[in-house]
Image 1 (cartoon, rainbow over the protein chains, first blue to last red):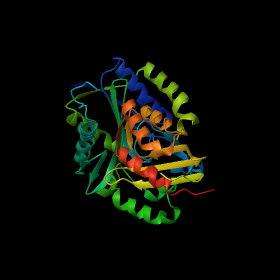
Image 2: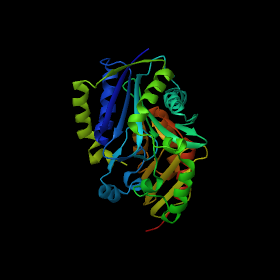
Image 3: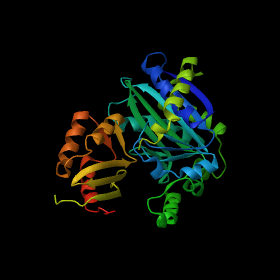
Image 4: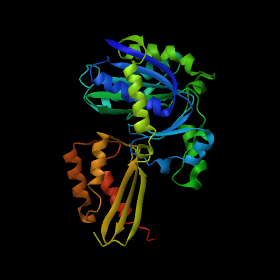
Length: 252
Length: 101
């Protein structure tokens, strides 16, 4: 099975989400094969799920002060602080043999790339429905999927390091008086690759493990490539029109 | 359903084994002036859920459950992490918790 492999490094939140969508368009149009992409976020960013309220979830002033991008994803799920992590996206036609019609099953299939990659780094992990990957009962990866134009787009993050206090400095909580307890709960429920291994693992160091992991999980030959000029142009358009547009980011 | 005073009621809760659901029900003149359904759930297609939510604005509160179910079926939207019954329950609880301004 043939997959295009893009490693696009650091991008702004709007560009990152725009490129995921541009790749979706080109795979849907038959202009590109199924595609796996790895990337990271510069500046750091908070993304909220499609159905979340932006102002309800995010301390916009704190993000502005810290120079943190804020964006609404095209996918559901919860708020994510994108700092020390590896982010991946997979775009596959819905009729591809790899993708079951059942959404829950397809999460499990596509998350196997994360699990295999973590295994190569020495972190034993499992899938936890609906959309998480856990190790030792703690979440180490969150994943989200949308289906558009006859394709599946799944993107997700692997926490390489996690700073829960820093994250909560950028998020709002439902009840301020319970903030301390919530932070302690999240510290118990979330971990990172670096924490599990007892040493710092950065993005560059993690790339080969996850590339191999996804290749095994997808039974795919990954062909390194760069986004096409058309994709980069569309990514810039989508970024400007949608992801950098308050009408989109504040739609809920 | 008893007549509701004007004001906004809110439900916030994690669905057991599922996701967080936040529902605001704003009443004016005995009608549901505005309902907002938010949370970290998933719905496919996402835009179809927007249309489901839009179909619930300004309706008679007594019709909420029926109209929600009809709109979900009509739009062919599949929701993960939160059930339609959870949304109906959240609506009723929000409506029972109206804060009069």
